[in-house]
Figure (cartoon, rainbow, N blue to C red):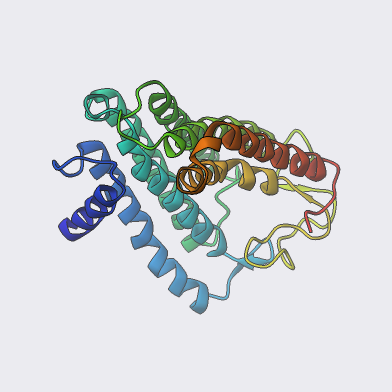
Length: 283
């Protein structure tokens, strides 16, 4: 584990985004939570190849692996963006608390999803027993708290940036977490409420994940609310990358470039949401 801390610190120092004191306690929390996701992903991947049980037409291990990958990326994004916050603020209790909430909620969610897969049971939209209904409700609360923690980090980057951090990366990181969090909450509410087409992510078409889009699993027979949710969540990575590229290639266009990238990201979520709600497949 110390080797992982040292390698992460070396990477951030190479970007000029952290000092010589190493990782803060908040960063160490995120590294630990990322390690848990990876530790769960390895046996889940093995189970995917060995276990032939299906749920909604696909392997019971498909959902855990997707969440393990997604949460690793989300927590990893927060880890890499924390050095964009001014040092004293980054080492304060507010950032630590936001990271603690992110780690606890992400870990609890993925543990339950993995446990349900091992039992051959659905984790989402499952209220068949009182315990599963309670767990699904708690998982929904945890998901909201997780996204709010990323929103808090984004706002902190925007309001208390590190003085020596690259402008594009800073703005892209802040805007990415803020916009991504807000749009993720919106799409998650639409997805989880069941108000559009009943429980589940399908809108029209065949209510199965069998034959879905390669790797992603999105429905090819009707609308799928996971599509806009996916694009909303990954704004958290897209805008920081856009900002970093602008820093390197066109520093004079940082602001206008990020405004265009932000508008484009919102447009993609809006178009795919409209497509899903109308019952049309993404591809």
